[in-house]
Amino acid sequence: MNSLAGRKLVLGVTGGVAAYKAAELVRLLVKDGADVHVVLSVAGARFVTAVTFQALSGNPVWTDLWDPRMGNNMAHIDLTRGADAILIAPATADVIARLVQGRADDLLTTLCLARDCPLVVAPAMNRQMWEHPATRRNIAQLGADGVAIWGPDAGEQACGEVGPGRMLEPEALFERLVAHFTPKRLAGRKVVLTAGPTFEAVDPVRGITNTSSGKMGYALALACARAGAEVVLVSGPTGLAAPDGLVRVSVKSALEMRDAVFAALPGADVFIGVAAVADYRPAAASEHKIKKSGSALTLELVPNPDILAEVAAQPDAPFCVGFAAESRELDTYAEGKRRAKRLPMVIGNLIRDGLGTDDNVIVIYDDAGRHPLERASKAVLAAGIVTHIAGLLTPCGK
Ligand code: CTP
Image (cartoon, rainbow, N blue to C red; front, side):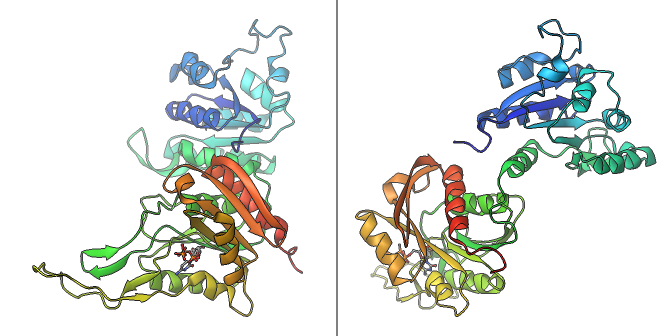
């Protein structure tokens, strides 16, 4: 199941140029399973048409309080009935001012008054409008009225000015919505993770690495952050962008990864080793580029430290979770690694099921036995792993 499956969201789109970004937001929400109902203000419809939002959401788009398509003429009630949240993105200075006044002179403001679900606004306006004392007052009042205000960002604006007032990007709004609906199972916890491959230098331009994409580690780091944890992600070289809401420390080699992990470890409640750490590194990297010669080249490799085993062996070790990617006999090898490294939990998968892909099949091994999770996206599996870990942690403060 996706993170927003079964969620009914009302998206208010008001008259700002950022309305075009609301179309992308609808696409992201719908792709993740949300049921999105767009309420487009008259000014919003000057920027993007209702047809665009209808095509993307698969639902009728509403503008008029008196729309005859609503049989009982109660659009303001029917639209928010059962809604999990109303998000206004973009929210202009004008709609913010009207919300503060409790006006009900169009469909969007009326349904904001008649709601019993959370209201979120994502402001979008020119820098001077955002900084105007009237807007400052209105934003403070809206916050005091219990309305969440997400953004704005600072940067280049459509009017050519630079400063605060840009609407948050659709991806950032999507991420905040998902985090909003995620139970805070790891609130008050600190989680340190490793992800991606390591790169063991042979000479200044060559090295030994592996094909780990880092996707599972990044998905798990994001799931921990969504669940309310303070997260430090120690990442080997990947092409992935750092997820919002966590600290990423970029490293190359296993030795750098170990140093970064131990630097982040104080106060950690959970350590999750997802990285495909190279088991060996060249005994000494050549200072200069190695030139080819006709004869065979022998590299001397020495073992790298096992970061996970070292963390688990600490006197006050956090709850340690390992990964085991195997090509066969998953149960035997994964459970064997759990016992050998003395870990409370290992997540096993068969390499053919998940390396480099967006989904996977995994089995969780713990003291109670094996717990298979069915094939799903790495994001969904990560949420399942977080639930499992949270269930095994001793309650906070004990
Ligand atoms: N790990 C680690 N440091 C290493 C090696 C592995 O922290 N130097 C962690 C990985 O992040 C993962 C788990 O240990 O959580 C993998 O266990 P391991 O037995 O090392 O796996 P493989 O290297 O795949 O072992 P093998 O080659 O024997 O299958």
